[in-house]
Amino acid sequence: MSGPTAPVTAAEVLDVYRRHLSRGRARLASMTGAAMEVASRGAYVWDADGKEYLDCGGYGVFLLGHCHPQVVEAVTAQIRRHPMATRLLLEPVAATAAAELAAVTPPGLDRVHFVNSGAEAVETAIKLARAQGRTRLVSAVGGYHGKTTGALAVTSRPLYQDPFRPLLPAEHVPFGDLDELAKVLGHGGPACLLLEPVQGEGGVVLPAPGYLAGAQRLCAEHGAFFVLDEIQTGLGRLGTWWGADPEDVRPDVLLVGKGLSGGIVPVAAAVATDAAYTPFDRDPFLHTSTFAASPVATAAAAAAVRATVDEGLVERAAVLGHAILARVEAALAPLRGDVVADVRGRGLLIGIEMCDERTAGELVLHLLDAGLLTNHSLNAHRVVRLTPPAVLRDADLERIGTAFTTAAGALLRSASSLPGRV
Image (tube, rainbow, N blue to C red; front, side):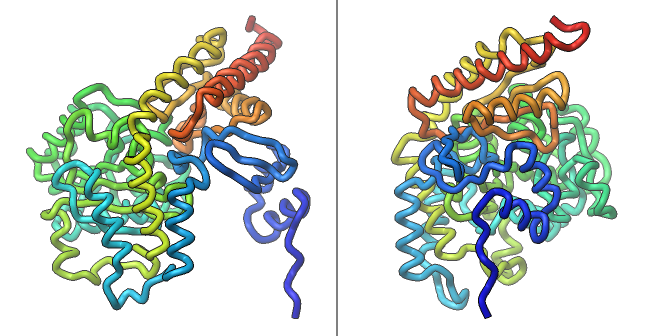
């Protein structure tokens, strides 16, 4: 019996989406012209018609760009040799990856638990906390930690939570407000606090200096378990190895993902202190996954960390971030106030806050037309987000500036045509 014919045209792929994948995704794709991405390398993606896009999106995954040769070689060699493990014998690739990752995490964070996705890393941290009596969950308003049921409880967004209630009980405090955090941690029993150094899906929200250090101090005072979610911000995205670094923060568990994949194979990790990891030391089968720490995934992770070190991509991210932010601010300056509310960022995590959601969508589409891929923000629909790779060249910076200038012109023409706007 022969199988179905593989879809080739955009119309055929849309039809398969509608019948087998997601009618909602098909509707969104129709709005963007139903372009199909079919190839990628470095900072670029190509669609089926041969159009080239500079990728400043990817939701934080592609810090090393696409098809990084060092990661591709490590993964393909592992696939040829031994891609999946029996889980009965020792597996050296996972051991190598754990050592590579622990070598670049803040001191004291040495115990690595590999998983398959960021949300699974969050679940791991919640279970470590609960296994040690910290059963009360606390997170920040606007925070995003994933959509599995435990992670969803600490993702403060009713849009995603309401269809799946009842969830695990969780309390949400204003991001950046240490006074409110002190009140919540001081009442109600031992807690587990989950925070991001910068809220990515929340719209690139940067707290005031001292906030993370203050949160760590409050956790110590109240016996709370401190989880720092660096799934999007870590491994150099912010121009430092970790968002924790500027304030010398040492959480109980550090969550790593997205860039750990090298843009090749999904992989994430929860990296813990010895004390935090104690429950999993006592019973190695307390929290397991068939596919976690597979040789092919950990080969990607080890290679991604090595490439980041070898190529100085953390330092490069800081330099590129300043250059991109300056170009975006200059291009959008004529729209500040009426159309653009704010431009902000740190390293290669940059947000453009528009005055309304409709204009944010228009900006994404105008940039797409100009050959620039961006992201919307899941918890802040007025914020268009840039998460470009750290392998950009000078010509790429100019291309970003040109794309934003073109998009700004289109938005300015659109805004001037509306009543009451000039």
